[in-house]
Length: 274
Image (cartoon, rainbow, N blue to C red; front, side):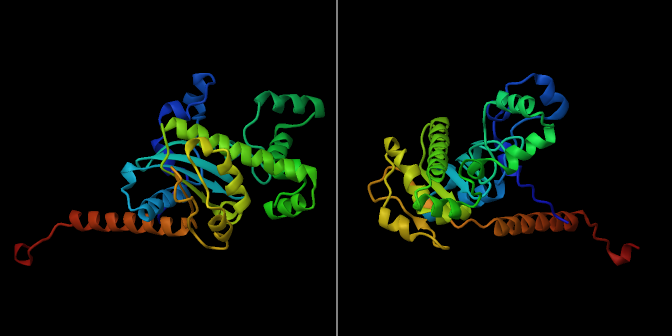
């Protein structure tokens, strides 16, 4: 059997990115640190975008935006993860379908005291009753879109918060890498929500990001490709992520190495020596 860990791609993060500023004993005793998730998707995207751009991955600074019901953004420089938005758990980062994302930790204890909640009850609120659902009343982004079209103010606000938070992470990661060559959008929402891509990239005009609105609107339903304008200083792509293919490639690579190792370990004996 071969096990591929979804966190393994993030193992190249430096301590300054994965250590939380809490007493050191919690890292030593419980290994509380940033691990990240969606690593298989981000890794696939980083290699695929290098192929599409006809450049070595070692030369690229990529910000990969995996936007679905669960979402994360990862900064990748030279094929290695510099930072990622999810942390010890998938709750960290920006708002998602039902997850709050990062917030002031004191909010948690404040609500628990006010509503007399147990840790499990509070965990359930943050993981299953927050995010888009908590603000708009809808967990599915397609329902939020329909409500936004109807003019529901909480749906409009939910999307405004989401787009703003995504743009903040991209801006932070561009700073962390001292630049960015490519920004990618993938997963269910990233691949199929042109409005999200357009609105997020509007925040990034200071980086020289420009979107081709016509191409952006047309790049949905399984289509992938470059959606940035010809004069954009940063390439922006929609990528149809393929985690299954990445896992299959990793599995094949591991099996091949194990098979080769077993072959090398075998001692060839001449029958006449017996």
